[in-house]
Length: 116
Length: 112
Image (cartoon, rainbow over all chains, first blue to last red):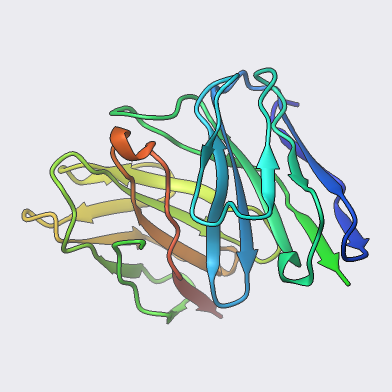
């Protein structure tokens, strides 16, 4: 079934540890996104990629890094996790990023991360 | 900033139309209005989008005022499964990456 998957579903992590959240889509979408969602703050964009090989910073990029080595995968890495990174993380993809055209984003089921 | 303003919450009776308002007074000429919803514990789901004209699909209708400073999402016959947070989003232009910036949304409660 075509779609977007995230792993793990949930994770408890000690502060200072390194963590990579995985995101894979099989829709051959060009653009991919990472959001975090916190109570009272809504969804905030962390990083995005309009096409394989390119990435950009969103609203809240500090403490996170991404890579886009191919079309399907867009991992999000926390190099040294801190408790303020406790959140629900959503990955999304869209057929194209950028100008003009319809940009429906398809969201994954989310990863619930707790940093202690 | 999200550039949109929505009421934080609304109630609607099951079977009735739900009309969700959104103000976007600073929208520019080539920015689209998008609506997404998020059912509890799930990822957001696309509903509908528009630029100038009113739009309708199998989920909802979108009414955009002539001056484009506000819009209304209409769920014609709300069901209990429509209970969710509804986000009105102005899609940024290409020079800003075409990204979606989510605001706080409206929490719609559909009641029996």
